[in-house]
Structures are given as C-alpha cells and as structure tokens.
Length: 263
Image 1 (cartoon, rainbow, N blue to C red):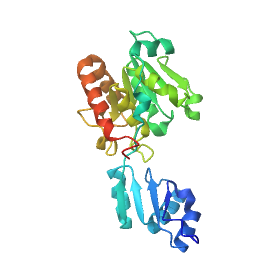
Image 2 (image 1 turned 180 degrees about the vertical axis):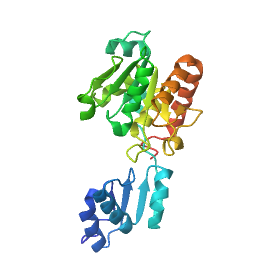
Image 3 (image 1 turned 90 degrees about the vertical axis):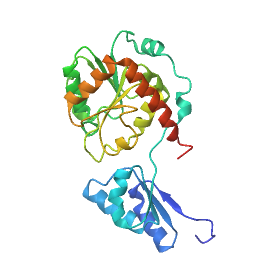
Image 4 (image 1 turned 45 degrees about the vertical axis):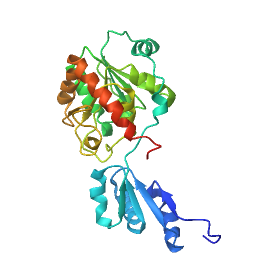
C-alpha cells in the first residue's frame, strides 16, 4: 500500500479475516471467493464480515449466489473447473482394469473423493446392498465412521491415490457416482468436472447446484439421499450402455466450457 504496488487482494477463505480487516483499514479493495454457504456459527461470523466489507464476491454456483445477494455486492458466478490435459492420454478400460486387478467383465461403479457421510457415501452403501453383483470402488480418504465399520463385500475401500493416477481409475469404471446429499458440503465439487472429462457415464444427485452443470442430456440424475434411486440410476446405465455412452460423450463435450484456463 505504501509503495503503491497493490491493486487488490483476492481471498479464497474466510480464515484470512484479520488480513481483510487490515485491507479495509488501509482502503485496499479485496475480493472474496467462497465455495459453499457457511455452516458452523464461527464460519457464519467470519463469512458475514468477509462478505460485508468485500468489493466483490465470487461464488461457484447460482444456487450460492442467491444466498449472497443479501450483501448487495457485485457477485460473479464462476464454477469450478478441470485441467483437460490430465485427460488427453487416457488408457483403455481394459488397460485400466488390468492395472487395478479387475476383470473386464465386471461391472464397476467408482466414487472418487472423501469417503464420508457428508458426501453421501451412506447412499452408495445402500445401493451396493441392492446391487450385490456390482463392485463399488470408493477412492479417497475414509472418514472414521467408515474405517470402523464393515461395508458389504462388493464395496472396496481403495484409499487415497495420487492425483496423477485418478484419470486411469475413473477410466476403469462403468459408472461414476456423485451421490451428494442436500447439504452445504455438497455443492459443485471439482470431481464433477473430472468425471465429465473422463468420458464415463455419470449418475449424480439432482441438486440445484449440480443441475447447473449436469442435466438429462449429459448424465443420469436421481433423487438425492435415496440409495434405491441411486441403484436405479446405475441400472439404467448398465442396461442401456449405448444411451449411457451418448450421455458421457455429451458431458465430455460440455466440460470444455469448464477449464481452468477459461475460468
């Protein structure tokens, strides 16, 4: 500020509230990007002050924009995105299966992300009980509630993987799952765009924020918080693979509008 070398500050978390206060005192404009509505009391407090004093607010969905309109600020809606170059040299499904030790004849559903009730994994387990002949692969760090329980035999906890290996794992799937519940922790996740870039059919919860990107032309959307509905969506993909592949191709084309370069 003193040397006139700052134009503005860009924050991506409310934990920088003390710095934002300093910026306000020094009359330095700042912009605040947030990825979900605040949940806890302390988060709501920080988020309120960050939003109140910001020059502008950036959110990742129109669903979130509705919440932040109360601050009467300029609001930019900018969805999360994907690095398409990570998906330019995908292996074949056969090669991906071979690496993971699965037969090509197996039907496999993959969920990638935090393995937690907050992300709807309960409904994946419920769907797995309905579809015991299908393998469900959960890729990511498991929350304590899942490390201390025994899932059905057709549910495999794969654990954390290097991001470089994720495209190959997605490629091994017949179906990619986005079972998010009606929760503020479930809005427009980055894996949504990675799923789209993989060219594999997606079954996702029909949530307002997710429906801004996915629709009935590029995915199978099902009622959230319903393991039976999730199982039905999976069955639709496996019973009509030609239609499912056309949905996946449309998603792969649509995701070109959601790259980090464009964002």
